[in-house]
Image (cartoon, rainbow, N blue to C red; front, side, top):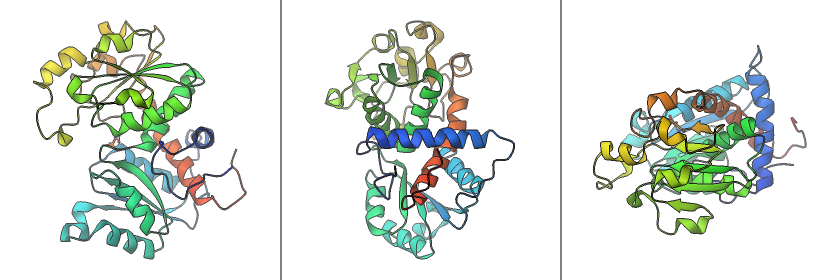
Length: 312
Ligand code: CP
């Protein structure tokens, strides 16, 4: 089986079979990643470009390392250090990268839909590394991979996603993906940070963190995205933390074997206490490592779309 599209733009339009293909391939990549020799020839002769209009540590570095581990030529462009700062449009920048022979362009952009626009205008495959408030599909794929590693499957798991749901592209991609794979998703946050009509996506919506946490198998905290808030949507960070922060007492409402996740970067003491972030149930570090494996799988699958070869 191959991926249907030349691009990875979001999980909303991706089938459960395609998601499973990516996660199964990531299993092989994780095996390679944790072996003594991480170097593989799978992307020899390919060029991978990361084009980031917003800051990143995890996503950008994991794509860069994934490319290098698989022997691709990898380069990075940041908006601030490129001709974007001279007024060049996204399409012109994309076409310039395309003409230099890029096979995959990985784009992070503050505008929802920017990767879709780029994908229509270049021959290279485009991977959405986070577009505004819309989607962050590769984060959700690594989150689902991490859950399946620990729990075996997403089917019938109860997952609580807590925090700034309104501005969270991570929450949106996870909701599309997790519900397709059979999980029951609860979301909780201040009512000003919950999108209207959220129930239509198949999730249960709560205004208290306690209700969302009851018997949860997985608890995911989200960062408050102050950079995307035009006006104050809650009184103070302290108030937010008091009512929605995840601490050890609140987590006792979840199942005893619940796992704790966060896409990072974590604001310690706001969405999670340090004892929760660093506790035995936390998988935050595993998420980071799995991010490399999942991105290796995506680069492999996109560059092999027209080949019958399969790594599994
Ligand atoms: N989770 C995530 O996207 O992290 P970065 O912003 O560091 O890439």
